[in-house]
Image (cartoon, rainbow over the protein chains, first blue to last red):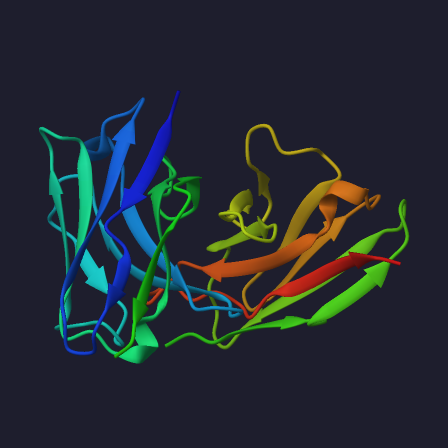
Length: 120
Length: 107
């Protein structure tokens, strides 16, 4: 079964760091574009970052550029989002998603989400 | 950044009604548009990609159309299980912005 499972969320103080993981099963992440999307409490969806199949194209939303990095461990078939200098506005449910094999951009498989709360 | 707007922000309709949501981009995005459904407490689900292509396994009562800056999402016959928030998303240029969402309820 094709699945994504996020982990690593939690309560973190402003200025702190956190690494989110997204473990894939049923497919190989290097065959797909992979994305991170977040959703603040009661708010809409916000695209955060993506990485392409060979890792040569990586993009970030301006709101996280310079603070977040995206990476993969191909052997573990796991995607990561390293978050530093966290702010209150980073509080959200973070989802990882698999891009369509055709376009790369429509996310056809999503994890259940992991919650990040930035608060003192 | 490309701004996406959706209207209405919410709607109530009866079971069996035809429901239409519009999405407008602040600039030409060709057909680089997705539509998602999100139920409360759940991850989004891809319904439509490339503005009008139905994702595998999605019921045919869902459809999308449009190109350029103006797009439409339609549920031809609203079902109780369609209660959700619907989002459009452009992928013509990063950041790949979502619309603010349209909440659909049963009247």
